[in-house]
Image (cartoon, rainbow, N blue to C red; front, side, top):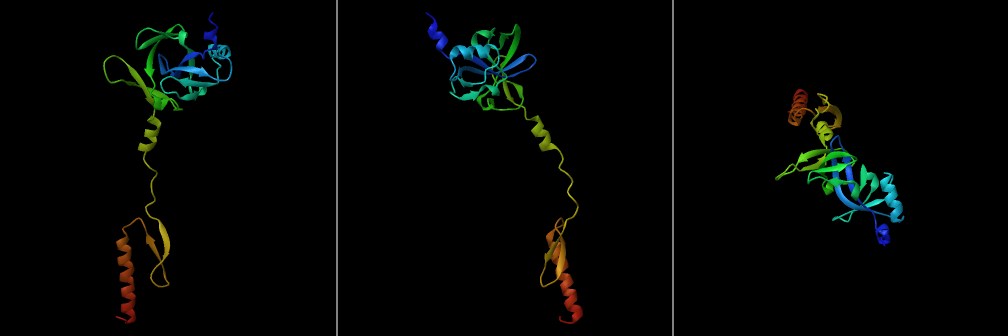
Length: 184
């Protein structure tokens, strides 16, 4: 009588990350794949499923390796809108937005806007911020480059100081040379 239920793809809760008292939950999905539904259900119960998960409402197919846990629907019991019972423990739920479903790094909690104690998850970008705010390596005070100036002579210019000083220096040296030679 219930054979049609065994043929249906098993429904799961996709958990992105598990912290001390918080689970970061992506939402409901189905374990899709070429194997039989019974085999997929057994692999899910043993936490060794390696197929694709089709998440509800988005229709996205994501690989099981993107999630820390895939829990059969009946194994996660909702206590209220913010807490669940799973593995004989009470967990706070933080909802993971769609943009973070494929994110490979750690997630952090953020309080949701609005009434209640809802939490959302977001990417932990503190390491990136530290790199961006770290002082840059010191730049040498001067860098010298050889350039061909007017005529055949080689002149050295310091590109860390204002360029107008070099032009004035080169012009005044040329003027002094011409003056000494009696051309002016």
